[in-house]
Image 1 (cartoon, rainbow, N blue to C red):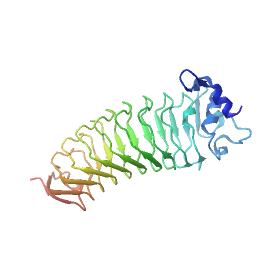
Image 2 (tube, rainbow, N blue to C red):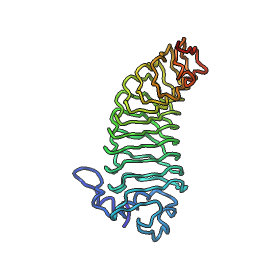
Image 3 (cartoon, one colour):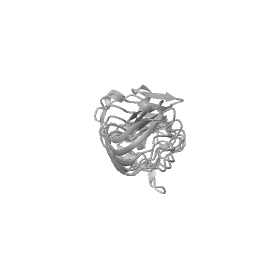
Image 4 (cartoon, one colour):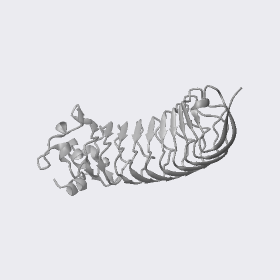
Length: 286
């Protein structure tokens, strides 16, 4: 059946969206890889493709695809994530040559992990309509752009990686999910001021280096579990208070900013603070 006809027959006119539940999983998966130029790496003979239970990297449970791992297959072309079967919980396609946009607005409701790093995706991404069960979203090392709205992420989200892209604009760090453990937005073009006094208590690492953030830095109310905080090579200025850092902190990188003044740091944490190429004068607490 031609793709266009299949699409036409599965549109729900009243809702204006595709009804994936009415299609066999084989048909859905065929359309997920419709834009892949070398799809034989996944399904074998393109003219007589294998059933999805024989596809590379696809895990089947009770007749349904639940996990898809297509990393390092040198795939070329585009993915159509909107066609993923509703049963898919994990989708991994890291380290390929994939292009096109990334539609995060129609992912399976069961999805927990989506890893698409080291590709050549372009365009913006929608973080406001992620599945409520999402735990891990990773889209680093690509060419994604636009703004990042972090105030409506799923409560369950634990890791968000979007570093080494071309994202712009400011970010709101005051309404992050309570479950968040790690956030990496380094190597982008993000800017504006940041508020660090309302970070989730679960946060263990926050990597925001090599952007264009500016203003002052209030580091007096960081989460007690935080062990890595990287703000190097931004545009922060003014003085900074380092007297109330988390005791588990292993790395605080403030290098390459316009920060200044004398700061007192506990003996335990003194060597964890990198203030190179700033005007900060580190002093050990008595």
